[in-house]
Length: 610
Image (cartoon, rainbow, N blue to C red; front, side, top):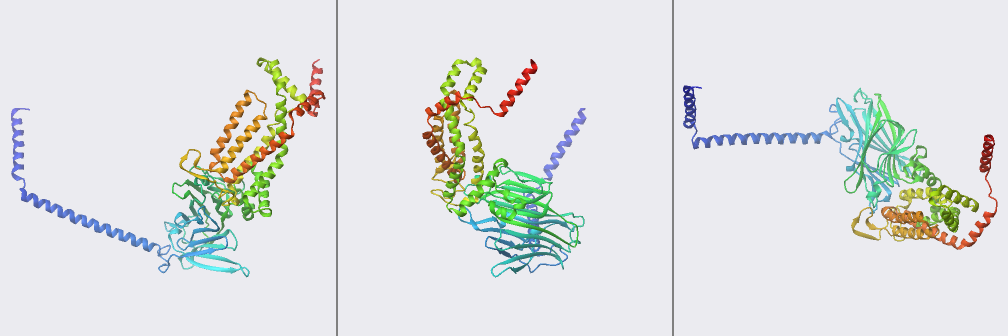
């Protein structure tokens, strides 16, 4: 770049700066320009505010008129309709239904109350949803958004009873409607429910193959312990040709069932809402989420496709059960559809004992002996312990034989060092055989009792008969008893002190001490005894928030076992027992037929070898 070019550029730059300086506005001109800009901004802001207000008014107006206009804007204006709440009730349940959506908004079990003595409400209006979804005129329709026309009829059955029927119709035109029909019989936990479509084939989208029935509930806390109640709360369903299953009760879960099901239940610890198909439901989508809202357990939801053929009239018949999870009641209402399996009786290999022994025995004592449930548990425990007494006696006797033989076992151990473990074992087993002692005799009777203990572990927390029944200091045998509330919460223990749980732990430790005195003492047994002492302490933490009826049962059962052990110990004399064993040694050992056949086979094989 030469000197002339540089000079030219500098002159252009100077001219531009000078022109900008000479043509800049003065202060008065700047003020006038700013006022113009501010005025334009205010006008624009006012215009936008007016537009927003008008848009809001238009939206509110549309919302107000949507619930009053017909299902489809071309026919049947519902200007005169307003929401009504209609009640169907008998001596067991009270159903409140709203014409807004034609749905149940309140389910009250009249015979029961919550743990804090409030009416027991399974559904609440603002915590439930129910209706149909489908397409019509390229628009998704949700029946909850519209008003139904009600009509109540009553059929007299006899001088004192009548059956009430409520029809709720959602009109789409003259003689075109969707109808929800609810029918409640007297003295029943069951309500019939039907959906009908009448002349809707030219309204519902022609390519629709199903209507979607949706049902959701926020399940309220009804019992004293929310955490414990949540363990028994969830979504259950019955496969048409299989067994009853359930979704997880401890985590959130979604599932679509491709197999046909007979019913779906929103089950809590002691009460259930069940929707039962006349034939079967297919492709049901379910979800269950743990609720973090105070006073609620889970949010549960079901979507059920109802096959739609596009006929003039189509009907879907169902039933609702709203009631207690009582085994006799569920058996009365649905033994053929597996409703009793909603009562959690434990794993299959122990549930039979609850189903065929404990429940009939419990009901017999309740109906024919006493109405005091603390005494019923006591009598139930006594009967079970008396039936099991032969096993208890056999177990003690086997342990006592092992104890009196311990000096002879010690002699064998001295004779055969550890290096000759096989010879030591053979000598020990020979001694047991001559003495007629089975080393497993003390364990097997106890193992046979384990299914019974586990069965009762499942029975008591789910027994609605114990719910809100008091005994001694326990106000509710189905929940924990509390003699003191702690100002803090102990991990795995809780913030209260259960006296029945403490008593159960104390008598278990006493029993362990007594039982260990009856055991032959060696290094291996000492290690096992230490573990056995830890178990009652673990139970103290586990059972503190469990059913007080269960802790009471284990307390009484262990107390009876201690008494039985004390009586057996007074009856069985170690010296006499040792003499009997020595006498048995002198007699020839009686061989079983199996042993005789085994020895014959061995002799034949030996002869062949020779």
